[in-house]
Length: 339
Ligand SMILES: *Cc1c(COP(=O)(O)O)cnc(C)c1O
Image (cartoon, rainbow, N blue to C red):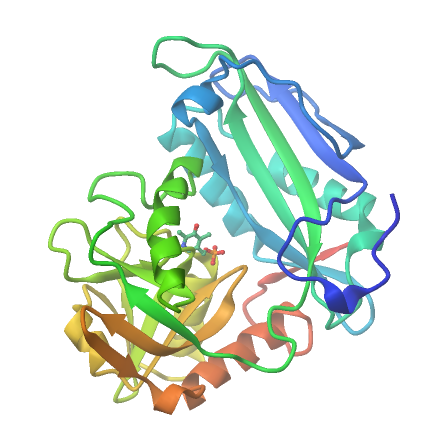
């Protein structure tokens, strides 16, 4: 398998790479035998696998990208490793040790280095997965597990500068319940958002904003990205609970507090407060920092910055991506070099 030559045509679609990492354990406690790199391809799985029947599975997403010198960088991969461990525990799966996780993703990056796009042309998206692959008929933890890391080159998210999106507040569907698994990157959280996203797209919106399931009043997140808004120089973001604790979210909060001298409020944000905001944006590994140009709630459409990119949104984007691609000093030691 050869690396793509036309880096500019890459979007966020699967472009398989040469190698993936696979490890299997029949321990439900967490002893992980050495895994191995093998050619990317299909896995054999029983129809009675726990993951297929009862959704016992989690995933991660992170990007490897090149700096101007051509070296390959990962952004805060320790945080992905930690979240992956916590997710495994939430779903009664044997946790993958941090070092093991980091060695596996590093091995996948190295084995597929020719698929890491040149500086500025995108990244190699890494997808670690943990599935209950053992057979089980009654509901219960599967007797065996598979840890896989595969990769795909993806394009730069913004080829011509930041582009604000229009989002619709979902009034008919919630993403996650209090005391549920909304904070876990578990596979079962995503299929349930497809119908509301489809409805939003049919109405001309690019994303769905979910409200909290208890009051149906407070903004939770935007599909697969965390929500932020800014009013009078204060940065607001929904507090942790049923939302996914994003690593990009944490990084933005950190930049706001330490470098931008902005007060940060992690609170319940009613939709009406969002409608009064000066700027809004959402963040995630895939979405980076995506400005929200307009938000629709019931029959009210609110436009931010006349639909243009807000100045602070632009600043967050510039600062975050400069650190991620190695263009600026990394005062928080967020970047790991793969060598
Ligand atoms: C992965 C994800 C995010 C973003 O998390 P990052 O760690 O920043 O990539 C936000 N919301 C949901 C639901 C997610 O699955």
